[in-house]
Each structure stands twice: as C-alpha cells, then as structure tokens.
Image (cartoon, rainbow, N blue to C red; front, side, top):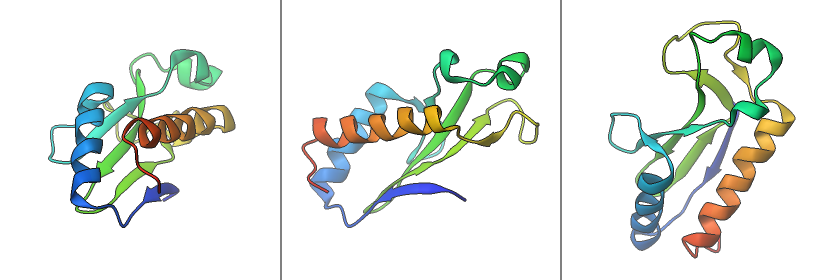
Length: 110
C-alpha cells in the first residue's frame, strides 16, 4: 500500500491531531480511523462516471504515536471497483497539502 506516515509523535501531538481530524474529516466508525474526502474537481473522468461509488475518500489512521494517510482513492460504498485506484498526481498534491496544513495547524515540527 502506498502511504504517507508521520511517526514518533508524542501524546500531546496525537491529541492535537485528533482534535483537528474530528473537525476536518469524517469518522470512519472505528477508533482512530477517518475519511478525507477528495474534491470532485480532482476526480478522473472515470471516477466521476461511477456515481454509485461517490464520493471518494482516502483513509486516515491515527495510531498510538503515528498518523498514516493512504494514497488510495476509495469508495465507502464498494470495496472493489475500477474507480478505486491509487491517487492521481493532483489528488496526491491535495492529500500532501492537507497533511502539511494539518501539521502546521497542530504545531507539529515533524
């Protein structure tokens, strides 16, 4: 799996990240798991055509001392579909900017 991981975070940093994730992402229904929705304008033509799979998200996992971002565009409605794929370069830029902004806002110097 392609992922972006920030690890070796302390408890205060983890608590701050959790606050921000609750504000900016949707809960995935499991402790420490969140959904970051990909903007519709960044979806590929193929992904946009799969209206029954929309919206598409990347998964965010908040672990004991790490935060992990999947670089996979996935549907919450279907596990397997041709529109579920590794993020495109533009989608990747969106996720990386989200990560940078999140770390900056949480005052994490990782």
